[in-house]
Amino acid sequence: MKQIIIFFFLIPILTFSQKKDCKYDFEEKTDSTYMKALSDKLIYEKVFGNSKEFIQFNLINNNGVPTLSFQQIQKSQDFIPVKCFDRKSKIILQLENGKIFSLISATDEVCSSLSYIAEEKSNIRLLTGYFLFTKMNYEELKRSRITVMRVQFSGESKDYIIGDLVQSEILNQSFKPSSYFIDYLECID
View (cartoon, rainbow, N blue to C red):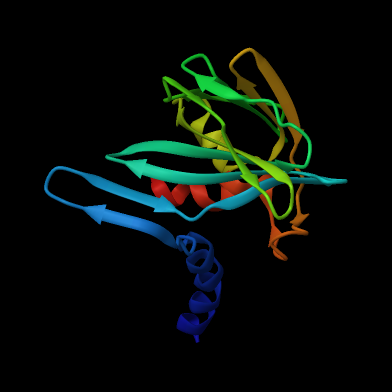
């Protein structure tokens, strides 16, 4: 009887202590290198008239260095100004507990590329940058949700409100961007 009672007390502990289901897009281990990357997750979507903007995150472990891949996709029938990242660029996250967390650019200089879809008469700009985590407050990202994200591009910055749930109009999927690091950061530790 005691064993049954103890078993029922241990079930919740065992359930919460198990690692989340981490699905990798890429994982490679050799004698000298180790790299794994999670799949892209939508963090922000804005559809307004003929303009669309998407931001996706992708966590990467590159030889033990946790890295965030940031990708911004903009689509519009109007002209889309170029945006760039350089060594001074940052992603600054405000967490629900009030703390601020910064990721620093690992990119020397990269600017958004422009494509044109003639059938839709639309411009598309794509910007990808890589950002490194600092030791400061790293554990806070695993415990507190994101509320605001400031992206410091070269020469300008833009703030994004990060919601608890994004129902993507384009992808027809639901995402939980505010808890992105809570859900996935341990997958690259």
